[in-house]
Length: 216
Ligand code: ADP
Ligand code: AMP
Image (cartoon, rainbow, N blue to C red; front, side):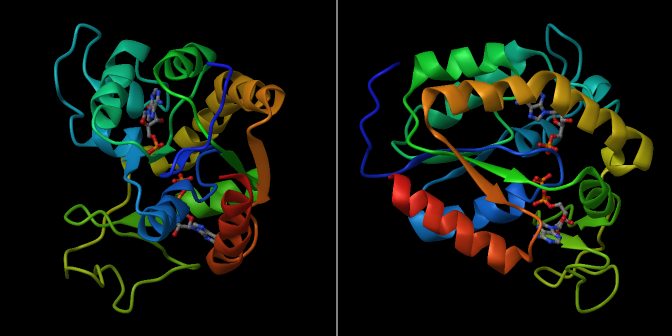
């Protein structure tokens, strides 16, 4: 769609390489702007062993590859079907998904979180997640009060299977190959806003919030 009228509830696509802080900042966007966070990675993790026409999501995710478009597109169609605003986290990840989304809805702003490869690797290999409530921690940058225990619900924290150093390298490669063209698409359409993701989560949120407010 070419005409892009801002809606009352912002329609946000949050881009950035794995580990840039998309999940962390999408939660802030959801809480502040009142729009649902649509995270394809979470939806796929909840259905990792679901048999689809293309095999299970696990076969792709554990190798750091993209899950086939039809499976992911269906998740997004369903999630956007009864909401005006949204923050998309982890979608679109290639040009075919971008064109699919473009047919489905306009978007108001596309912030791009950026961080160096060294920082991304440190963040991902140190990430710990709560399998029960989904809270995210980092052993060094965002440690829980009690080591290995979720501060929100008391469950034991785990490491994502794809956060190993080898799979992280592959995920960054896939980002450069498949998702950087998506960045170029939104740069050309005028919706892209670059945000430095290297600072503390609080500083990143301040810049991101200002960027969203300027553009919706
Ligand atoms: P993404 O969703 O882009 O993959 P996450 O939001 O899950 O990234 O963040 C990856 C890891 O880095 C998590 O362990 C998180 O706690 C940590 N993290 C997020 N933002 C920052 C930041 N600004 N500085 C340091 N660590 C961060
Ligand atoms: P994330 O939680 O965003 O880091 O995503 C974890 C994994 O889920 C990715 O490495 C992919 O295997 C899969 N995935 C998430 N979103 C998408 C998407 N939009 N397209 C294809 N695969 C995806």
